[in-house]
Image (tube, rainbow, N blue to C red; front, side, top):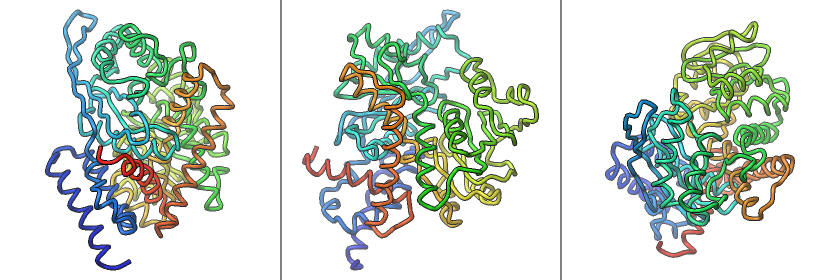
Length: 453
């Protein structure tokens, strides 16, 4: 590649990043996501100067629409409470906006924008016609009663309903938003705008939900990781696996990894982590987290031989072969990544959104680890959400096996397409660059075809 073209590509990437940084200097999570993405894009702009001429990156990194609103609700004591609600409709080049709603105290515009930006490429990688969006609120469901959560969700949807629709924007769940919350949100939407079942995904099976949706992100993570291992003459069989989190993603990743022959020895929540050398009992975790809504420390009280420790599981000095972070963003820093490597890890695949810091990713790459980035490895959830939309449109319900088979094929295709993109742009074996490039080129080409919109 000629030096002039290389300079033009790198200069363009730097110039666009500086514009974003000047506009939103305090949006650290969003800036991190954009910076990490840009790090892999030079080969694309060397090969496609037409993307520079169309200023595709500046257009792509600015959301099509950002909605922020007040969410007033009454607690059980009758006191008026107020939270902030967000919906970022980021890019609709390949389909209506699609992405989850997160309820967590950390939610702010920066986090919602980072999640929405990642969602664009994740959705493109699925091969399904869905654009990227994300939303949520700084409301904390922990410690709230069902009635308080219902009143919050009804207030939140009263405003959000003005901006979503089957061919416009289809939200789903994320951290803090499970079947209970989706039910309350859909009930309020139906009251306001009618029974359009396809407007939310992650619904209950008795009102339009899809079998395998609950399991989808965790199962998809396991299927993607299995493909990555097989491509490198390995498998889960006989491997020790460390998983963080004890929510939806982690629980079903534990289940599927165990079925594929791995032994999962850890899980965690925000207070600490469990080490169970005999293998995590997923039914006990489900009982604690899904039924009792308790803390993971209770696992050690219920399972003989299991040990509970405070702090991050990624600080533990425990040998394992595969790490699957499934908790939250930036849960693994550079020091913790080096600890993983010292523990003997050979592969990392991300079930959470952006769980590894830039320093952690750099450590993985320097150590030659197999690394499956979140936008590829955790795309199973949104893939089955799109399959739920298809079933709603057809007024049909597929069997668990049908949905699971489609999910497994989608995850295989995501891995294969990432490998092919990495090979095409001379970064073979770099699954992060491959996923970024495969997702980006699909969206960029769609934007180019539709003109300056």
